[in-house]
Amino acid sequence: MGPYTEVVLHDVSNIDCSVVAIKNNHISGRTVGSPATDLVLKILKDKKYNDKPFITNYRGISASGKLLKSSTYFIRDEQQQIIGLLCINIDYEKFAQFRNFLNELLDFPAENAGEDPLEHFSTSVKEIAHESIISIMSKFDVSPHRMSQEEKMKIVKEMHDNGVFLLKGAIGEVASLLKTSEATIYRYLTKIKKESKEF
Image (cartoon, rainbow, N blue to C red; front, top):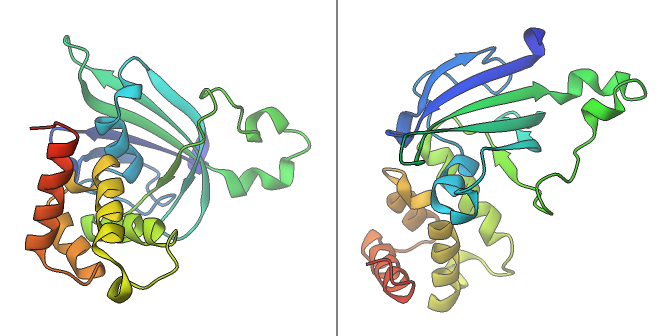
């Protein structure tokens, strides 16, 4: 595929530094030892991916804001648990000038049963948590200082459902952005897990 395609191998046994091999890393800016992306975390938490071998032709965004066309293939063990992922990210912008000749390559077909996942390629745990909470907080019209406990709970629940708290250090980052204590975030998570019967 040439220099405009990045190939990444993830080992999800350590999601804080899951990238174990990467080719053409100038596309996303990541290196060996970079953490799992927000989409990878969601895949590990969301049961709807249990029976899927891969997801293809979705949009990715690099840390510099570059638009990528991405596909992820799941690597499973004998118990069908995901142990790794092979990801292919194409620098979409480089091909835009050939749109009339490459329509089939450049279109994003709806082969994901109505899903349109979006993946951010972050280079640190702090960056993933920050991007996730900023995205969720944008749905609210008030600043963290003026948010009610219920609003903060909703944010923490959505981040929990998206797998953000699988990352080490995420609780501290979320507490900082929500202008609250880590103990409060732990309390929210305990309540959320009890309500969803995760204990």
